[in-house]
Length: 65
Image 1 (tube, rainbow, N blue to C red):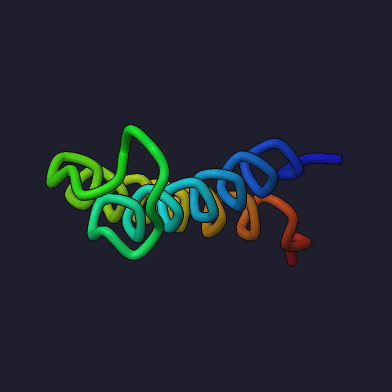
Image 2: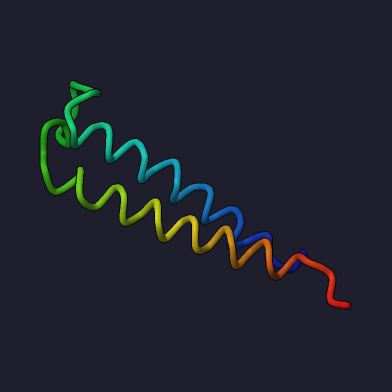
């Protein structure tokens, strides 16, 4: 079970960060986040954090030799 939490949170962060990015850039309309530069900047940062969490989760699940 070790490593499941970082994997899950990392995947969630990548998806949410991607949505924030496209909303901030104005590709998805109808939201308070649409066309707001701050979300276009925070989205990629969240994606990077999610990728780090995914990497750490994968390392934690790798069998030690």
